[in-house]
Length: 157
Image 1 (cartoon, helix red, strand yellow):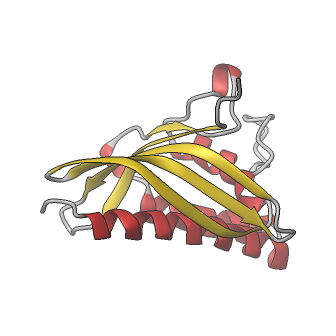
Image 2 (cartoon, rainbow, N blue to C red):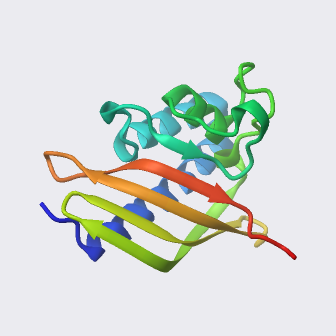
């Protein structure tokens, strides 16, 4: 069950499509529907069933920089959680396109790491480019699940 490059590409595409789906659900029907879509994304793409997911979102800081449980990840994507007052809902920012550019990958059997850049484009055409690393574990049924998600804004000298 060795992970191949096509599976890594498909996993990145699925993540991007999910972010866009969260944004569109929020715009069309509000936070409740966006929450449903975000929960589905977390269940389908993230490996919380394996244990803590090593999640460092782009716009997080202080004592809540790192999120290892589903509640913390969900809050980052949709906000509206008083336990995470700084979360504004990264997933509800009108995203329309997500592109990735690979720097490097590492694959060993059912574990893979990907590192590169992800560019998110909103409905006005504004872009945000982030440095991103994902770690994946393949499930027994062959699905890739994110077990590490690190994102940060590029360093500026």
